[in-house]
Length: 158
Image (cartoon, rainbow, N blue to C red; front, side, top):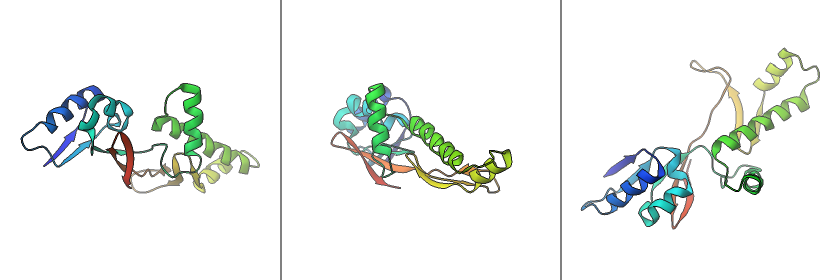
């Protein structure tokens, strides 16, 4: 009933095509790599990708302040849509700019304090550094469930 796919766009396109031709096709197909949320998957698999679900860390249509503007500018400069790594790098500079705008002495102690107190929204989503039994000063990321529908990737849930 459920098929979990891993691989690259070309391989996935072939697998999706074969799945749709099965006597009893899977009711739910989940792609577990970034390839399944890229346009190439629809370009390769076409309608066979309809309903394909995947989990992403970031897409430009997520409701984060500045994400759409960042995506437009990135696309103008590089002639392609940004991946989550680019948004994450941009968010890092947003955090650095925020810290530098608050710092007065720029000592190591002050910068560490300001980072620990950081709670802000970026193009990549919310940033807040937390420490628990496993990690120190980590920003917790939220995965987002997306699916292909009529050639477009859409948000299903968080």
